[in-house]
Length: 130
Image 1 (cartoon, helix red, strand yellow):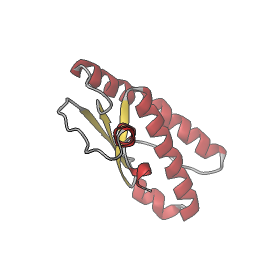
Image 2 (cartoon, helix red, strand yellow):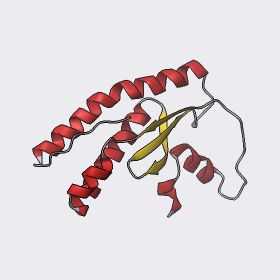
Image 3 (cartoon, rainbow, N blue to C red):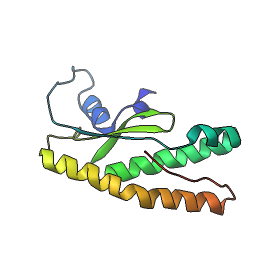
């Protein structure tokens, strides 16, 4: 099912008028790309199931944080995540940038939480982004 691969705003546009072509419109977006530092080394030393669970948790938390600040995950490339602010509706540009900056400001705490949960499970995973 393709729904899981589409941004929520695009899913909503498709499901509101399933038989009609999508309306195209231009709008300003602010885009953020987040990538875990050392993911290749992490993948080499973890069991596949543990790595998949850790990555799932990371991606879910990144998606939640992005949504809290008006962003949507539009693409996932392994541990890299592309987030766009402004897809859901036309928004003033300054607000898009502020949402992206607030997302970035919240990443440190999020990664700290992920690391603490990982340690509680006995996994030594350090989360850093670039």
